[in-house]
Length: 224
Image (cartoon, rainbow, N blue to C red):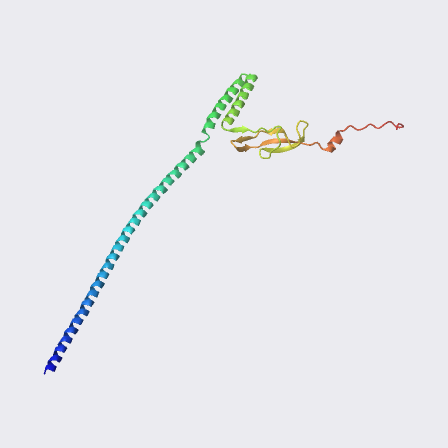
């Protein structure tokens, strides 16, 4: 009888122990689940924070893009205005750039009228003097606008400024030098406006020298 009672007590103790072990396992599982849920919650919070930061960065980029686009459009508009102004200045320069020269030429026209009026009075000296003054005034106007006559006579022939029309023998100039001016040439600032038409001196040929030498007279017959 006692043995049976002891056996029952041991069984009760074993059941109690098993029950406690099961409770411990359940508590452990619950704790693991709690920690897992906490970890998942933390991960969700981190993701939400990251998404929020990305959204803020996206908004900042959009704002910078709009600002840059606005600046670019303003710069393009300003460049277009500058281009239009330059085109307008260029057109006005092409249209009215010769106005100062035209104003000076009117003075020359007035002087021609005065010279022709003097010719009606048959005063040739006054007419000649008037034309000389007109020529001097024209040269002054040309120089005023940086149109200068090329000095060529007596200079070595230069194809950059001279245009040879002929060659001729000259006793006053060495071969290859400009010995005659056919038409004056001019420069405009540093550019050639019109070349000088020139004659160029050349060396006298030997055949010409021989032809020009006097022939020796033959002695009379019988005299040697």
